[in-house]
Length: 171
Image (cartoon, rainbow, N blue to C red; front, top):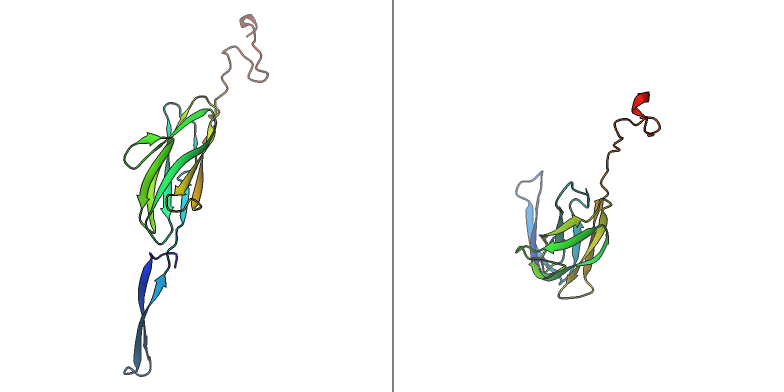
């Protein structure tokens, strides 16, 4: 089952007659949950507007959906647009790559992606999570810094209709 960790998972079933209270049965057994590696990743939220100042922080949720504890590497694999990006580990270490962080089976870890705009146009960053146990087990998440919306400011003597400047003597 997707909700269980590797090993034997015990269960029991009880049945009771509704018409005869003395008739009932109990059965116990277990199923074996096999070794499985699996991971998902998502930014929460996946998109934010370019901040007025400073950087935007995107929480990255890394979910070990496998049946065993695993170690992972997070790496910025793509960055486009007007921004700089860095990851912050659970221990506060920043960089383009977080080399090794452990996540128990069926558990979450949270990293942070810090995006600092270098303009008003925003951009996109892709982070890839790699299993340290099996390089074919990966997940990707995309964070988008959306362009800032700038209000149109007309000079005080501009026409609201055409935007052309009207000479002061004609106002």
